[in-house]
Length: 313
Image 1 (cartoon, rainbow, N blue to C red):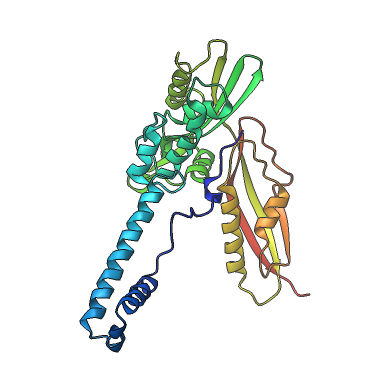
Image 2 (cartoon, rainbow, N blue to C red):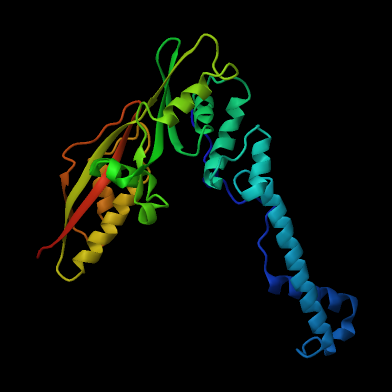
């Protein structure tokens, strides 16, 4: 079961497009309809009547903008800040420390499935993600009748000296740089069984008002499948190979940013991302095969090496 993609919703009809000149023209038309002699002076920019209408038009645009903001404030796809906090309160959800609007909006959308004890996969995901903002993604499945597996892709802050280069690369690819990366040499790593965040989530899911009595719950950590992308871009002489390579690498990073549970990374998808204007062929050296992802598994692109190669026809 998946939640609705709010970004795919059209702009609500109640939110109108504002244009100052259109409002001002409407005011002038109304004035001329009610008082035709005004046509003799309405074209003079220095006419005080014009200044009054400009002020009126500007204030009307402000009022209409306020109405637009009020309409957005009660819609989940558009509400931000404290307006979003109040929408979340309908489902007994509060913003977690340091949680951004995007994360809270995702949890509110799951809230429809958590009005009772956990049961559906979305409900289990919501309960897990509500433990901490550091729980970024959750996978849920039943490995046997009566038992639910809850797998966490969570981040843990660590000192750079306490993690391996591979762990640091995975953490950077999934979570970006730690806010204290420069000042205190901190970085993110993926949580593993035994980390506090896993224990906290397990305790929350075993609570009496969350876990159905007949269900066993096994909380574990995600299995990351790191992969390196190595490719050669074949292009005709002339175009700047370095720019072509940089653009291709950026497209692969964008593909990697969508890393999620059970989302395979295929060679076809990588080649499609690497291809672009001015590129004739892509020679993908790594990975040598598709990287499939099963329950609890997340493929992660940890490094990208793109080499341009100019060739004549």
